[in-house]
Length: 189
Image 1 (cartoon, one colour):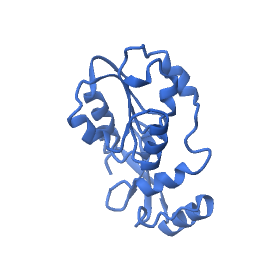
Image 2: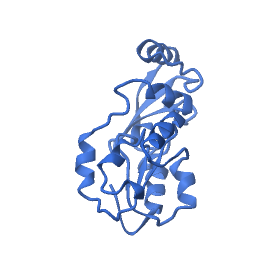
Image 3: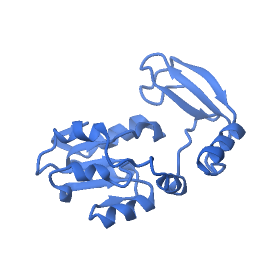
Image 4: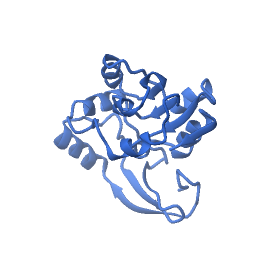
């Protein structure tokens, strides 16, 4: 199995997580039915070159949540936190005129840390999160970064994501697409 981040062949399969066990755990812990997402046992891999640990299905695909999955998580009070230490760190790099793209933004809590939320666009799969953000005057689009980057090249000074990479099916494409959205003066954080 090639590493999903660095492409190395130097990976090891660490464990197998049984599909039925995972489905049962999600149901018990969060009352979420993930049968439509987890259709096979998961393989837990480790890349010896970049140290990434990741899950795949037997066929090499990476399962990912859908709108229903993230809408359900939205209802859990701890899922989309209003404040994270990362927000305080990241805001020091953002000026009043910075155009900011946040990918995997949840309900766009980070926008409240910005000097000008009018220059903010968030990308998020959850349609419920989009509705919550709209109530606060924040623009979110329900589209993948890969699709968004096709028509939004070089439009942003800052591209960021917070606690999102573990949800991504193709980290390389995810990061590369964010970079395509940055202008020459931009910074990927």
